Length: 190
Image (cartoon, rainbow, N blue to C red; front, top):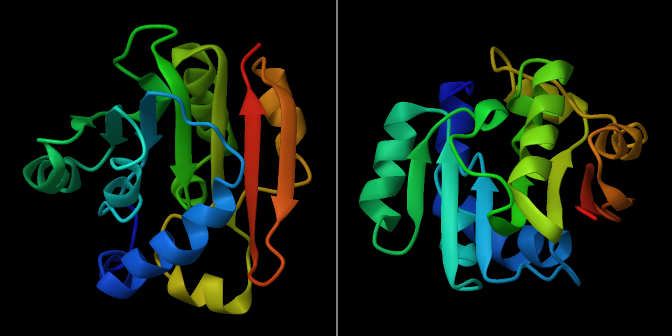
């Protein structure tokens, strides 16, 4: 996983999980219909997953880090299908999911080209009418310190609509968070 030790400790903490449940996900998924079959890309230590499994009938999570995927499978394998895989090359069939989500992970994808491949894969595995939604952080001095020696490739929210439309998404909306340095997005597969 492309995160330093301090960052890993923060993202695996109960405090982070509570912040995700109480603030991040309610804002990021406001008015988003997830449907019955959800794919989460990059669940990390599972803070989002533990909330999302209660909101959908079926859930799959794809984690690139083998040890983290095994940890998630041990914790959540009864409630969700956990796959160790690269989200830029998903080992999944076309048009399977009603929604695909990713939260605070895109900035850990090392290149813009790989981020765009993740967007294309999200589009491919979504059913027609499905939604792709999520959130990520903006750069700040504190954010850069937290990411010291991490992979950090911050997404420009102003350019995100064009990138999502380039892979086929429509109805793209990107909003900045009113209090923290972050943004949410949602897009639909026609």
